[in-house]
Length: 333
Ligand code: PBG
Image 1: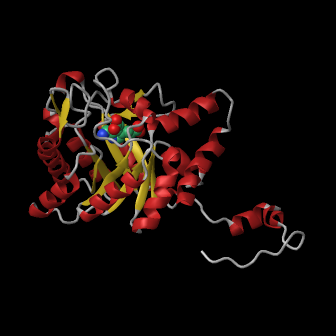
Image 2 (image 1 turned 90 degrees about the vertical axis):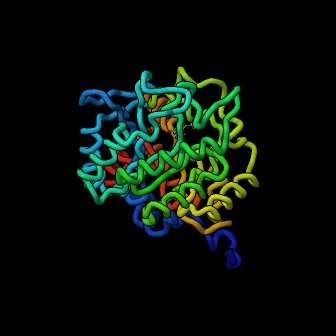
Image 3 (image 1 turned 30 degrees about the vertical axis):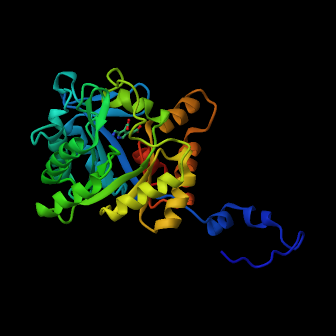
């Protein structure tokens, strides 16, 4: 960016532009609005109830009926889309994640109910096996190894099921190599050319997913870690290669995950590819803000909005966040 030479102090006093709210608002470079948010939501298959998620105060697992009502709420709040994640009962899990592509399963029913309730709200589904496997991994496991190509076949079945149920955006979060291309080809072959793909392109093996494992019920199950498929937190250049591959394979949008600890990656991806780039403010980020706020250590509302603004400043087109409905209300929606 080219810059004019700066007048020296006292001719230039940066504080002039901070002296009152009206001028601060006028010169603000980045703002967050409800239109930037994707509401991250966990659904369950039980009777009609909200089941609080202990590690994420203020969030609950929603029944299908409540998820449909939440879709209407998203519409009223101006939130464009919902990302839905399933809590799967233990007895429906097995080593192969067999229920991941069940056309009558929880995800299919939740997507249909939400699209019926509020067709104007976009629905995004995770493509990954971890909610459905008894070992908690995103792929098929054999002798302690995650099998890439056999996993892709299962992911394609899962993604097609989601598209048939009415899902608007498939979001592969599994980090297998080649899955975006396989999903795109399968969608085209079955006539789902309008179904979008938001690739979890640069997804790191992160401690910040901790509370999510409680939320979707994999905390007890996960054997080992996900470091052979999710990225090493020390890497940037690799993130650019991952994103480049997913775009080349047909991703319409890309995502960086987690969010706040990886804003440098967001910035580099935005600058390198000029593609709609999203970040996921994950469960652990939510939990950190809420835990500090509940101890009276930070101002909850300001921290929520400041954290979301940081994503926009980094260059995000939008943010997947558990704070979405809360933030939209704070923003006056
Ligand atoms: C699973 C998946 C995870 C999240 C979204 N999809 C967890 C993981 O990869 O272990 C994390 C969401 C969050 O922490 O809020 N494929």
